[in-house]
Image 1 (cartoon, one colour):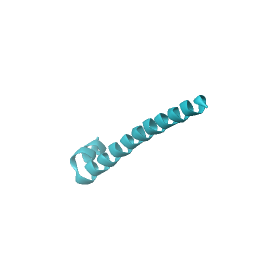
Image 2 (cartoon, one colour; image 1 turned 135 degrees about the vertical axis):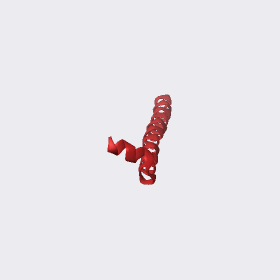
Image 3 (cartoon, one colour; image 1 turned 45 degrees about the vertical axis):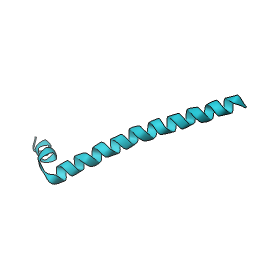
Image 4 (cartoon, one colour; image 1 turned 90 degrees about the horizontal axis):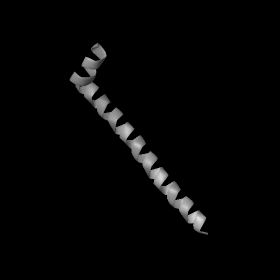
Length: 48
């Protein structure tokens, strides 16, 4: 319980939470970015 209190109430906890959220957001963005480009390349290869 003390971990959650530290995470949400201290400056270093909030900074850690911000980094965690940012990294998770980057993971989602990269996954969607790579999927979109893979689909585009697959479509271009199928047209040849």
